[in-house]
Length: 236
Image (cartoon, rainbow, N blue to C red; front, side, top):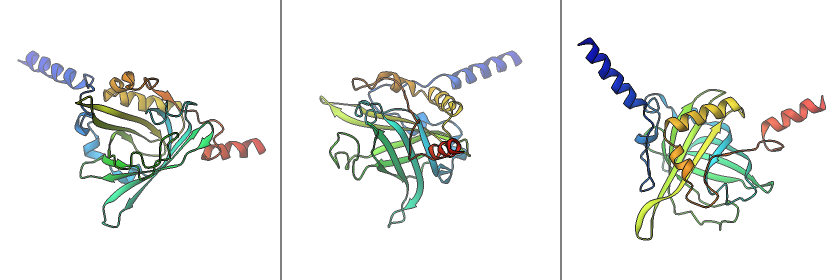
């Protein structure tokens, strides 16, 4: 009897640890993506702060910016609309051909922890017309999160569209955001992405040149805090 119980527990744990599997026929729901602890202990207020994007899978960052985007950062603040709906105001920046493209991304909160509905009022993405995606909602899931000064946020956006008469995944954005620009933070984020099954989308790449995960170069970025700290050290 004890052996049977032990065997059953092993089967349960093995199933729970199995990597999640997705496809391009539809966007996965937040419940299919999030780490198990997120609905228990995630507090949206902990999301506030300054982040370095350490890596991404997102056609609006590459190949739309063919120079390989650099110096990508995110300043997240919790605010409220006039109707009292709370949202995350994401002041986001990207350098393409070393030219800054600041962008305001807004994410309305929902009743579900870590599930937001994003939109872009005015597009400042290289080579895209202003307002081209103003009417598009970008469902955004905080897949996993680590709080604190060495914390990070793994975010996933997915949009479906009817293509050749068939509804399928048309856009996927995966963002590795970290409070510290370190290899340790990247490795933790990457492990979380693999555990959540996101590498299906990372390895797919629906647009030529978009396949794979791209690391972000944060050297010689004048608008970033660490740049000024490095300059101060050099002057001393």
